[in-house]
Image (cartoon, rainbow, N blue to C red):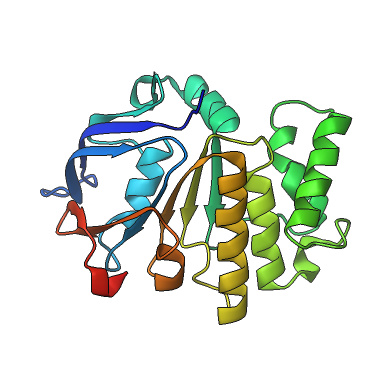
Length: 229
């Protein structure tokens, strides 16, 4: 059975001390295995919304249900466990640990669940690095180009074959050639795994690959204008 179905209702987010909501969304639904792009002006709340969907940032009110799990009702430990088991994250700034190899950076999420890395998981990480074009898995993160670092980040997000992948401006800091490469890799691997993908981006080339594109504007999600997508 496919997993990765999203049903979010009554989403409100307001920063502490503010008198108005950053966004107020009545409903957001996504079928498992689909790819959704979210665009919007700087400061519109795109990253905050993505963080709420990941359970990183708490909502002011509302519920976010992934499959049968309401992550807004989970206690801290349960939410951490859900993210480890069900969620892959790709950020604009890679969040790799310098001093660690590409392989060790991919395996980093596994180190949070135990000291010993299973041989099968290490083999999977190596295969993922090969799939994203990293020929030297033992090379340290600080010696990799920006495009290579994002490739490692994509591989890391898919380590546990999560049913949900959330990506925040994954191509914004790359040159045009690497933007296309990373977009191909991210979308291709997500499709291959049958995962649900939500991408926050202002890059039209990446948004064109999505099944649907919405725009966060004036605190609400609206269908993106065709000319922008």
